[in-house]
Image (cartoon, rainbow, N blue to C red; front, side):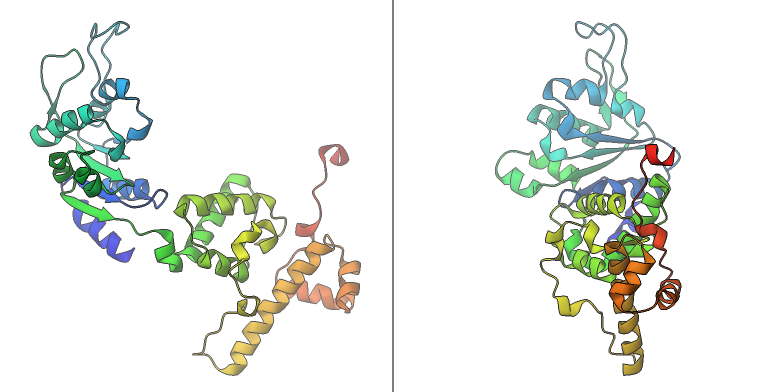
Length: 322
């Protein structure tokens, strides 16, 4: 991703057409916005068009607009997406889905920098920076006769491939922390972090849905979680099928053995206490008895690891509160 961001940094200030490539959910829309925000057009419009959602019969009028009287029901002029994006950026997502007719019209915009509204006679100059994205191999579609080669060459002036989440698993801990902070703002909870076992499992999962899938999984776990740490119990258990139980504790062999022992013990104690309190719904007496320690010892351990018993108590219904 550092290499990707370096390319973004290089191409953003230019007027060059950019083609973003990558699987569904890798964040192509995010990169398109990043390019726009670091360009000279950042103060103008950024228009996102999901080409796959445009019916063929409406695609031309949606992209280029129409004049009054162009067809039945056209009672006044309608501006298209290219009008709205003038002097700014238009992001054509899933460009691989547009029809052959629209490919020709889009080629004209890229080649001659002009377009016409439906029913219009006068060409309109297009001062729009085009960023396109595809989750299919456009070169292969060209070879199969499904995509125009001349349009492909116009779009791929600066191709930029976004790696899948599986290829950048080292980013997952940062994504998890970011999403926790984001959901704290949305749902007004105060979850601090994720259990190390959870993070390891997330890093080992293949993520066919990429970042979009990760976001959905984290959101579901966040909603279910009742403690201040995202625990394995809140996640789909299939995520943990590839995690070896003996690998729960991460080892850093650059540290002295005593320090590794200390960190490992703390990690095991934290995990044990979270699961213990969860099982006993935050009841100190029962948890202490199950652990074979006094309530005072349990309180000290909970304070040490900033674990609150209130986080494990079942939520009261509105009728109970009233």
